[in-house]
Length: 120
Image (tube, rainbow, N blue to C red; front, side):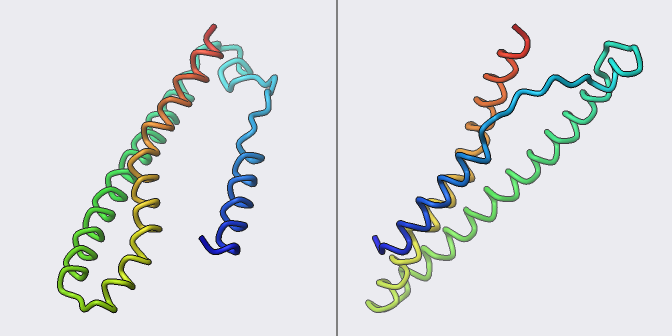
């Protein structure tokens, strides 16, 4: 792997780790501010957010499968030089596609973990 790419990936992972550190907040929900302890507003926001994330996941998966089909056809029809080029571009694509497919499962695990922590 190229040293510049390795340094970039390492820096990107470190930035993601720093950003993802959760900070506890002692804040009130909108329902508690008004004196109502039910969190109906947060349920609506959660439902809208889940719908948007679901749509984005479906679009991402469909696009990644279409791009894979196109790259596969180009690879089969290409010359030896073109095949070498497609092999170079295939690895970043596979990593991106794996992240798209695994993102929903990873996000669900994190959500369930933190929901269990706050509920207990």
